[in-house]
Amino acid sequence: MATPRPTQPTPQDLLRRLPPVNDALAARTPDDLAYASHDEWVEETRLALADVRAKILSGEIGPVGVERAGLASALLAAARKRIARRRDPGLVRVVNGTGVVLHTNLGRAALPPAAMEALARHGAGFQLLAADRETGERAPRERHVDVLLRRLTGAQAVTTVNNNAAATMIVLAAMAAGKEVVVSRGQLVEIGGAYRIPDVMAMSGAVLREVGTTNRTHLRDYEKAIGPNTGLLLRVHTSNYRVVGFQGEVPLEDLVALGKAHGVPVADDLGSGALVSLTDQGLALDEPLVRASLAAGADLVTASGDKLIGGPQMGLVLGTAEAVARVRAHPLYRAIRCDKLGLIAMEATLRLFLHPERLRETHPTYAALTATPAALRARAEGLLPRVRAVVPAWGVEVVGVADAVGAGSLPTVELPGFALRLSAPGLEAGALAQRLRLSATPVFTTVSDGFVHVHVRTLLPDDDAALLAALC
Image (cartoon, rainbow, N blue to C red; front, side):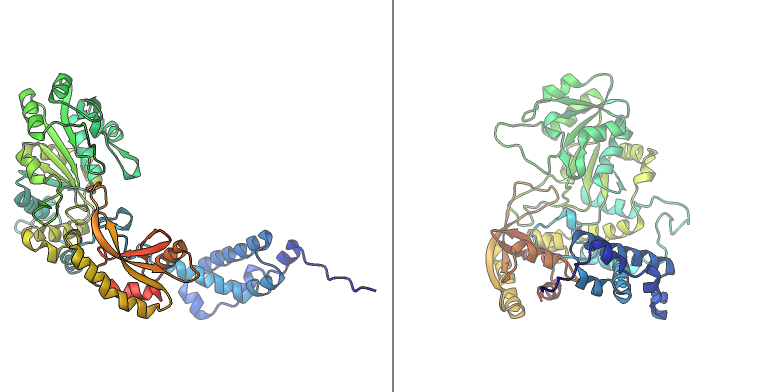
């Protein structure tokens, strides 16, 4: 007579074997209680238990798994790991191996060492933010940045807000709330995060009056649109795309002359906001200069602080004393002004531009942008034997790649670069890239043609140790 097979326990049977939360909590040590509060232990133990229950119901855990994961000690260990993850900082430094110099998802510009030194020296304690050291009276918080930007750009006055989107909005609100703003249809841009010029204009209280066509706008288009309710002529630099072929736009000088003839102010939203000529820095490319827009007669110019200036996130508003005063007087200004740490970092960053001939040595953004193919190849070949020594079974080669400026700057420009091409036996490229991102110091790379690429253009000088540790 055949021996009957033992009945397999059902999921409900397995669920009944799980210990109550109190059994797990009873095993806590004094160190555990000092590490986290009772409420936190209860919450995380319940979540650990719920995770085991879900795995039982899905069939992921069977009887053997319940004997391991369902023990009171195992639940407590799982809760301890969950609490430890809570303690880990989330916004951490990463290694940028993507070749994108201004990577929006990775914080855009790498702050210069001078900015980090200024934050370490002046960020603690109290700061000379909105007080005058001679009189002791209240003073504009951005005045230290104002002095430098006026010197670097020729602006009569400067103020700052928390980013360029805010700068554009407050300019529209201060100069043209309830009035029409004339802008070329080809400049109604959208940038990341669904930021659209028409939507920003509506939020500011201004009325959009678009003119011209997608690819061509003439001076006469602006002139026909000007009327008694016109508050502003706006030019928007299309920093994240280019229209090529049969196209044309009105030079800023002509737009300014038209504005003066009709008594209408002109604003120029530059986006990236270059302070120095990229051509002069040795690059075969360029972006409109803030100084040039002001010299052309724009009443206001807006730009980002964390793109081609390479500082902290900030929106710069530069222009005539009268126009900037209107911006600062707007009720929205206080809601979007800059914090003290950003101003400390920006002041230190701007001082680097007083010596533009040294930017390649002092400013990581310009070091990355101006790195030559020969220097990048040498950097990659210098890393090659060190990487092979750490992962001798992997495929590691130096290959040519295309790098990018990023952050909506110079969208049609490819920077010739070099990268380490990696492949790990038995590991798909996407899984390898994820493994590198999950290391103690996350390493971000690119994946193409079944390989992981670590672009050396965006590796900072002290990134090597973190990269090698992530490969282990």
